[in-house]
Length: 148
Image (tube, rainbow, N blue to C red):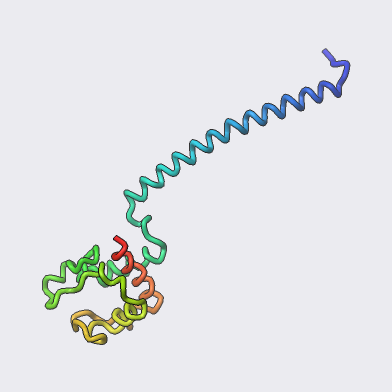
């Protein structure tokens, strides 16, 4: 059956199509909001489970260096209780109280070792082992011990 007024038919079809789009978009917004709330809850739970997410990129790189060069004496959590600590006299210091030191003194201690800064001669110098940027990211990770 043909309409007698094609312009009126087009107008009605356009209005119906517009209403269909509006209702469809509204229902999609609700779905998107639900997904966002679920994603936020999932991300929050990941922060509790995955310790790497609590660190910045530089801190994560520093943790890798710390685990390789420092944790055997200073311990995994920086408490001075690494597996080599029990054979050292004096024992290594805990790192949670070092937040008052400047980056320059951290750099000096790590680069020159204990002997170079009049501390324990048992702490090795890393100036020939680690590059300046590696020492810097190691310091970023060391500062996380005072945040805990």
